[in-house]
Length: 521
Image 1 (cartoon, rainbow, N blue to C red):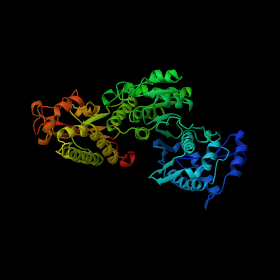
Image 2 (cartoon, rainbow, N blue to C red):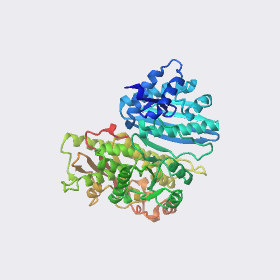
Image 3 (cartoon, rainbow, N blue to C red):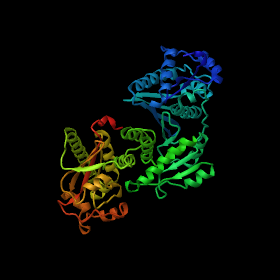
Image 4 (cartoon, helix red, strand yellow):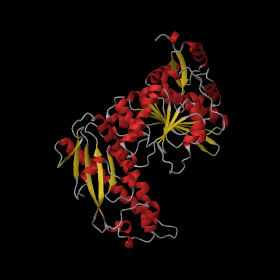
């Protein structure tokens, strides 16, 4: 490397002040300034810090970064998790984070030509830093009660995400200021080498303005107008000169191939015209499927890699994952390939037997956790000190059951859920492959094999005596249950059962044998 043509600059991930290089000739004077003003850290090595950072900068496409800006009274907080699936890159992230924590604590400056960095180092004694290694990188929490220091921390965090997206290209730029009192930036994920903004929350109207100032040209919204906290985003974006696309869906029944292909087209069009998208739902969960479609169909990713990419930007729903996988398979098999799913009587190979065992294990784990959560809710004391009873179980099924499914799916490396031919919650619709297995109402496990090596399993759920309080005949429901059901589930179909009746089914999709639990994220 010819150092006469390299610019050394500094960035940070969380509290990390990274030393990097950029090949812009007009920044050579900055390189000289940075190298002469930068200070040696206590017990450290400036040259070593630089070497590690240069390698990280070159590997920026292997890095992802989640940033959350918070406030707790007058305490301003920036929390960043920066990770890589490449063990060598992850190790360098940890190494450099710890070294740069030492720099910040001592005030041993880097990137002195950048006003934001220089001023942040000048206020280093007003900043608290926590660095915690994770399995694949670091979690860093920076905080301050000084308004100017807080603004510098936020500017610094935004600038680091630009490094993750653009690498060397961002190296010679001064970090943009963040004004004291400005609206908090939305939580988001930065993906190495990808210019788009993957938001983890509904942006406010003020935050939309901030996104435009940072280069976003088009907002893609996956929320429906009837959801809490939604405003007229189309008008708000138009008023500030941003383009807008609405692709609303709220549950699996609305996640169609047409919608997924429409979302894919947003990424394709943005790549063609060089525009930057800001994509959001309420949490990031509904953004992931369209991103997976683009990765698999336009970037050549395998289905497994595309799903990993979707999970990195917020996909957590196992049913959304199953639907997305099938949509990708159908798109790739549009040339008339053989059927994707085929019902089988029993496992045909040792690999399928192992997959069936994983499905049964996941079902048992989800059932155990769900029963425990229901029992705890029903026995918890109500306001009058008596057990809360069946009404409390309704909220468990609505809010806790999806979280349990997500946790089990993540831990077991599968997709899992519950469904029925008489749904209480429309979000519990069955994936397409399972629909084929569930007619006519099987009372034993059924299996389907996919041409890519995936295995689908459905397993029956029967009504037990304690379930009658919420699922029995309308005139036998526990006190208050009918009213609560009408409020939470106005389209409820799941009453009229007797003890021992077939209530529905667990469904589990197990990825190909080459994709184990490590493939889930």
